[in-house]
Amino acid sequence: QVQLVESGGGSVEAGGSLRLSCTPSGRALTMYMIGWFRQAPGEERELVASTRWTGGATSYGDFVKGRFTISRDKSKNTVDLQMDSLKPEDTAVYYCAARYITLSDYEYWGQGTQVTVSS
Image (cartoon, rainbow, N blue to C red; front, side):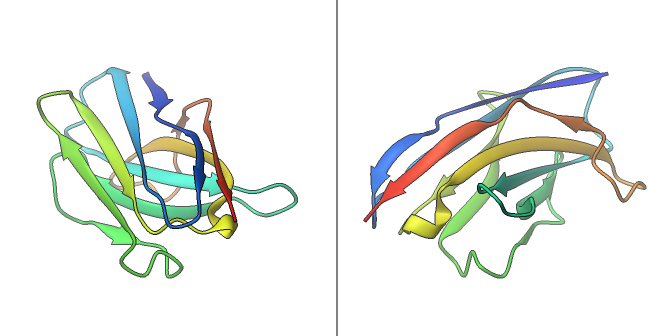
């Protein structure tokens, strides 16, 4: 089992920045992908960014367009999502998730953290 806890959400004005952190616990994640997803009210959940826990295989949703960066902080044992140039349409609940690298679906999910961007 893998437990995931998100932190760092909050409210910010358009153009501002937030940094989200995903802290895992449980089994070793050497063979896992970590993804950040988001879901706005009435919308489908969408992938924001993903990376392999050990590094590499990084990808981003098309809407990110260079504004967000996913990275692993080895000192804190977290996978962070740095979000810059935030827009009101980035408002959503952001979730951290994990999946074994050979699987297509994410198996483990955090509780989510709210991000609100005001205009």
